[in-house]
Amino acid sequence: MFELDEQTQMVATMVRQWCQTQLAPKIPVLEAGTEQPFDLMKKMAKQFGFDTMLGASVKKRIARLRSGEADDSDRQLAKGIGSPMMMHVVVKELSRVSPGFAMGFGVSMGLVGGAIVAKGTADQIEKWGLPVATLQQIGSWCLTEPDAGSDAFGSMRTTATPNEAGGYILKGSKTFITNGPGADVFLVYAKIDRGEPDPGVATFIVERGMQGVSVGPPFKKMGMRDSPTSEVFFDDVHLGAEHLLGGKEKGRGGRSDTKDSLGSERSGIPAMAWGIIERCYDQSLQYVRDRKQFGRPIGAFQAVQLHIADLYLKLRTVESVVYRTAWMQQHGKKDMAFVNASKAMCAQYAVEAAMTAVQLHGGYGYMEELGIEKLARDAKLLELGAGTTDINLLAAARQLIGVSHDA
Ligand SMILES: Cc1cc2nc3c(=O)[nH]c(=O)nc-3n(C[C@H](O)[C@H](O)[C@H](O)COP(=O)(O)OP(=O)(O)OC[C@H]3O[C@@H](n4cnc5c(N)ncnc54)[C@H](O)[C@@H]3O)c2cc1C
Image (tube, rainbow, N blue to C red; front, side, top):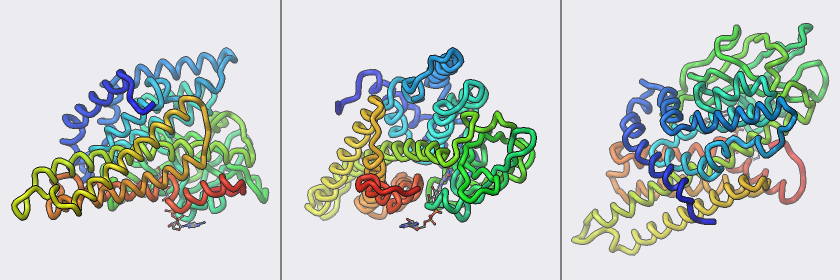
C-alpha cells in the first residue's frame, strides 16, 4: 500500500524533470506577476497527455449520462489520469517547486472541472466541464466573500434571483479567488433569493465575458505569489437556466454540493504539504552534510540532527496521510473527520518543516536563491485556505461527536 506502482513512479519522475526544466526557470517572473501561470498549466496538461486521458474519461461519463447508465463510479475525475494517487503525486511534485502552481492547477482541473463533471448535466459537462477538466480552459472556484469566509453560508450575500425567463440574475462579489485574474469559467455559490427566510444555496457556472462579470487586479500576497488571486464581481449577470449546476435547485441540500467540493479541496492539501516537506527534507539533508562550521559538517551537531529527524518524521507522516487519502478515494470511502483533521495537521507540518529548513540553512535559507524562503511563505496558505486550521479541527470534532454545523 505504501509504494508507488511503476506507472505512477514513472509519471512522478517525468513531472519532476518537467518542473526542473519548465517550471523552476519561470518562478521569478511568476512570483513578480509579470507573467501568469495559465499558459504553462495548459502546456503541461498537453505535454503529459492529461488532456487526452481526462478527455476520454469525461466523454465516457457524458455518454453514460445520456444513455442513462451513469453511476457514482464515473464521477471521479482523478481516475481519468490513472488513479487518485497519480493525481496526488503530480500535485506533490509540482509543490516541491511551486505550491502556487500546484494550487492553481488543482483548483482548475480538480475543484472546478471535477465538480462540473461530478454534478453537472451531460450538456454542462460537454460545454464547460470538459475544457476546464482538461485545462484547455481555466476555472475558478468562488465561495469566499469579503464578509463571508469561515461562515461561508451564514454570511453569504451573493444572490441569484429567479427571473421570468426561467433563469437567474446573479449579484454579489467574491474575494481571494485563485485563478480569478485568468479564469474562463467561474463556479459560483449563491443564495437563491425568493424572499424566503432560509434560502437554499445553488452553484452556477459563469463565463468570463458575460455582461456584468469583472475581476479585480491580482492581490499582493505574503506567499503563493505565483498563483494569481483576485476579487470577482457579478453585477446583475443574466444567467439562463442551463447555468445552474445539475439543472435543478436543491434548497438547503444545495449546501452539500459545496461541502463535497470543500472535502475534495481539503483532501488535496496533504499532497501539497508532502511536496513542500520532501523538498525541505532533501535540501536540508544535503546542506547539513556539506556545510561546515567549527571544522565539521553541521550535521555532526546533535541539535541539527534532531531537526533532521523532525523533518523526516513529518515527511513520512504526511506521506502516509496521502496514501490513506488516495486509498479512501480509490475505494469510494468517505471519512470527513479524517480529511479535516489530517488537512490541519499536514498544513501545520508544512509550515513548521519549511521554517526548520530555513533555520538549518542559516542566513542562506533566508535568501531567495535557495527557494526555501518561498516554500516557508507559501506553506502558510495551507493553514488558511480550504478553511483555517481551527475551522478544519472544529469540523472534524463535530463530525466525531455527531453535532451538525455548516463549517
Ligand atoms: C491565497 C488564497 C487563495 C484562496 N483561494 C480561494 C478560492 O479559490 N476560492 C474561495 O472561495 N476562497 C479562497 N480563499 C479563501 C479562504 O478559503 C478563506 O480565506 C478562509 O476560508 C478563511 O476565511 P477568512 O479569510 O474570511 O477568515 P475569517 O473567517 O474571517 O477568520 C479569521 C479568523 O477567525 C477564526 N474563526 C472564524 N470563525 C471561527 C469560529 N467559529 N471558531 C473559531 N475560530 C474562528 C479563523 O480560524 C481565523 O483565524 C483563498 C484564500 C487565500 C489567502
